[in-house]
Structures are given as structure tokens and as C-alpha cells.
Amino acid sequence: MKISKALSIAAALSMFTCAAGCGEKNNSEPEKNTEATTAEATTAAEAETTTEAATAAVPKIDDSVDVPEIEGYSLLWNDEFTADALDESKWNYEPHEPGWTNEELQEYTTSTDNVFTRDGKLVIKAIKTEKENRTKYITYTSGKVTGKKKTDFTYGKVVVSAKVPEGQGLWPAIWMMPTDEGHYGQWPKCGEIDIMEVLGNDVNTAYGTLHYGEPHGEIQGTWGLTEGSYADSFHEYSVEWEPGEIRWYIDGNLYNTANDWFTAVKGEDEKPYPAPFDQPFFVQMNLAVGGTWPGNPDETTDFDKAEFEIDYVRVYQKPEYDTNVKKPEKVFREALEDGNFIFNGDFSEAEDLTDDVNWKFLLFNGGEGSAEIRDNMIVITSEKEGTEEYSVQLVQPDLPMIKGKKYRVTFDAYADEDRDIVVCVSAPSAGWIRYLKDTKLALTTEKQTFTYEFEMKDKDDNNGRLEFNMGKRGSTATVYISNVRVEEIK
Image (cartoon, rainbow, N blue to C red):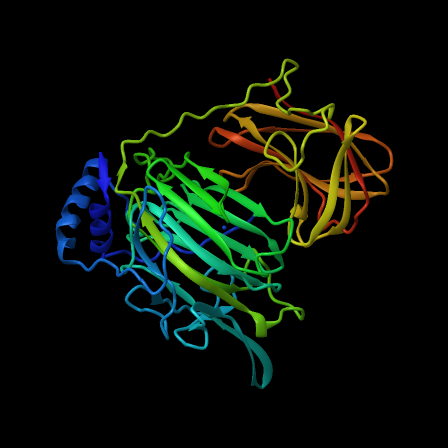
């Protein structure tokens, strides 16, 4: 089956009856309804709503500036924010009380103090107010705008130019949710496409994430800047959404690709692929304050500068999309000849620790340090421990975790002085659950061998990840790790 541009717009604009909301993102790592019955029923519903949409208005193209053409695409709709106020033919204000989701502190309002245009840009501003009612207390307001029921679409390329604010507890986001949030079920079954998230205390790292499930699945990529930050200047964030693949870009750099997702009611069969990403979605943008992922503001947070600026939003589409796609077969890593699933576990190769092959060294949330392979070991030097255990992190992904199998993790480690680190086997593609739970271990200046065993009790996963976490442990002492093994045991 092929879906044409006209059909995708019509189907999107006609889906004006939807259930209560799916819920917002719920990120726990760096990094966060009724069920559709059958594929035939879904197809029938699409055909029915296409007829209804014949008289619906297509979103207007904003021609106030020259918009670049993209080969193979046509411009579906855009907003260059040159008007004196928010264009409410394309955007909705979405007010919410504090604590609505993720333990966030802000109230989303319809006030033009929080959402306004300035110099050809949309500004979403977070405001801190001190009040007094017997005792002094602080409130926060901010803004959230959505294109729901106004600029919805199915498949396309979204391009957004934005500049984020810097400051502890600030959390800007550009993301997408389905118009009919009840079609496949409550979040995360309904699906969510996060085009960009940046934490205000770590404005060198941007996240692009896909949420789906149930159980909650997640595919996340990050793009870090070696010079400047996402708060220094405008950067272009883009997603290419196609029936069988979604790709994330920053400033033209591809950094995340997803094609292996699912949705299901727990304990039931999965819905036909590519559900849930086969229905109309809409773009939304907000600036959150506080919450479970970024943490709350502190005395360093400057709310005079707490502005999320968006220069433009542009949505392009191809003339048609082939929806006859199949879910890719999972490929599971084979063990080495000695049974080890860890590649370069003896650190005999001085590999690149910044790429996605074998070992990778990562820094988040204020962590600073470096890693070097030498003398058949890896040496992790920390300068700042950061605010999270994963702020200084060594990982190896792509470990095959098969339900019902038992595994053993072994490695040698020591430090320049006594200190703790945390080891685990996580599931980046399955909501960051733990196959081997977070385990704190005490390093000394003498080399020790550590051994842990666990049984895989969850759904087969070809992307288990061994993690060594050295952040937020009260020490920056250098860590030495060698002889790392993950093997299947009887």
C-alpha cells in the first residue's frame, strides 16, 4: 500500500475526536485508551476519515521568507514566526497545572508573558515569581504550544531551528505525539517521537528519542558538541519519519536511526508493524522547569535568560510513501571463540572510544574526564564527577540477552584510592530496565576480580548494555578496568 501526500493530510485533519491524553515523556536516563482491533479495522477507519476530510482546510504555507527546497520533498506547512503573535491557525496553547507530569514545577499558561513572538522568532519563556502567603514561596510559569488538530500529518521531514536556554532545571523540548492518542492505548503504547531535548545544566548534549511499547521501549541517540553549546546559537534539529524508519539529525548530522519498534498490550500479540508510528502526529514545543530528569532549579539558574527561542518550524513530505514495510529481523551478536560476548574485553586494541563500535566513553550532566586504553586495561580519569551516576560512564552495547538464559559478568578493577563505582547490564531499547541490577562495588588500590550472575527474565533483547558508572560517587579517583567478560552459563 502507498499513502499519498493528499491522503496523509486528509487523514490527519479528520481525526478530530480523540481520547484523553497519552501523557508526556518520562525520561529516566540519558539519556523520557482503547486498543485498535485489527489491521483491517484500521484501514477502514482511515478510508472513512479520508472522506470526511475532503472539506478540511490544509495548513497555510508561510511565505514571509524564502524556505529552502529539499530534493524529493514538497513543503507541507511551515511557520517562520514573523507575525506579531502566535499563529493560532497552526498552534494551540496547552495550559496545565504544576506537577501535571514528571514532577515538573511549572504551570503552563496561555499568557503572552510566557509565549510570544519577537524579531521573527517564537519565544517560550519560563518565569520565576516569589509570592507570600504567611510564608514566602516560589512559583514558576512557562509555555507549551501544540499543533494538534491544526497541522497534524502522517510521515514527513520536520526541520526546526532553535536555541535553548542554559540553567539548572530548565528542560526545553521539541517533540511529537499522535492526534488520536487512544488509537493504540495509553502512553507509551501510543508512541512518542522526541525530536530534541536538552538539559539546561548540560547544554553540550542533545537527545533524540523514540518511545513505544508496552512494555516501554525506547531508542535514544545523543549528539554532543565539541565546540560551543546549544545555548550559544541556533541549531537545526530534524527528523525524517517514514513508514519503516525514523532518522534524527542535528545540523545535517545523522546521529540516531530507529526501525525496530512495536506496540502491544502487555501479554497480548503485537499490533501490526509499523504501529504505533503509522498514524497522524503533531509537533509540540515546551520549556519545562524541574522534573524527574533535569532536577529542580537552584540559585545558579538565571530566569532572566530562561528563554527557549524557535526560529522556524518546517514540515516537508514526499509525494508518496510505501507503507508495505516489514519489521526487521533482530540480529544477535555471536560470542567470541572463548564464549565472551564482550569485544575487546582484554583491551588489546587501542580503539576509538567515541564511536559506536565496542567500547564507548560518555560524559553527561556535569561529568568531566577522559578514558585511555593502555597496557591491556582501560584507564578512566575523572575531573568532575557530575550530578548523576552515569555522568562519567563506560559502556559496551549490543549484548544479546535471551529470555531464560543465565549470564555471568566478570572483570578486574582497582583505583588510585578507595572509591565506589556502579556496574549494571541495562536495556537502552526497553525503557532502561536492568537485567543485572545497579550494583555498587568498592574499589581499593589493589586489583580485585568481581563476578556477578543473573538470569534474563524479560523479552529477548539484542541491545543489552554493560555499564560502568563512575559519576556522583563522592570521588574522582582514577579507575582501572581489565579482563571484562560477559558469558552465558548453564
